[in-house]
Length: 154
Image (cartoon, rainbow, N blue to C red; front, side):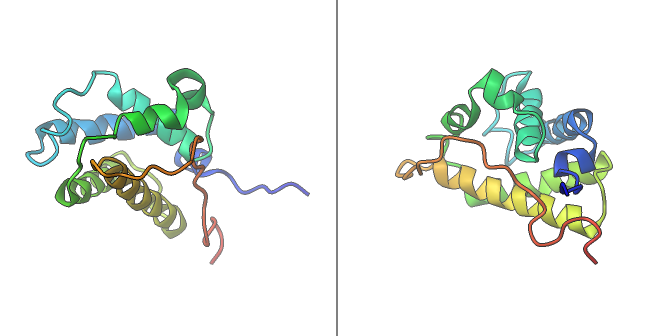
């Protein structure tokens, strides 16, 4: 019997929802005094690339790997950026705000798993952005799932 648990990507509504999320998020970033300097040279299509990356992370199509270079490409965009803790905290805060604004699912199971990835991903990005970063051996995008609380687990 196959597992009928939807991926996080499916549960949140797929590519369209992730594009809305990243558009809302980066609109905030562009106006934010803490993050705007870090993203000053952001390309206009950056929100779409991040939506594609997050889609793959949350169990959707492998489009980021196939079309944009996968994990090595994403990693290369963070190396040497020297993300500061206050920038990481603000990134998480604005991402959570954007998630609320675009109507990502509010159930505890989804938000727990989503927030866990936002924390994990932002901490890895900060660590990998430092001058003395020791990069791991990962070459593929880490697929994030439900963890300990898949939907309907109460």
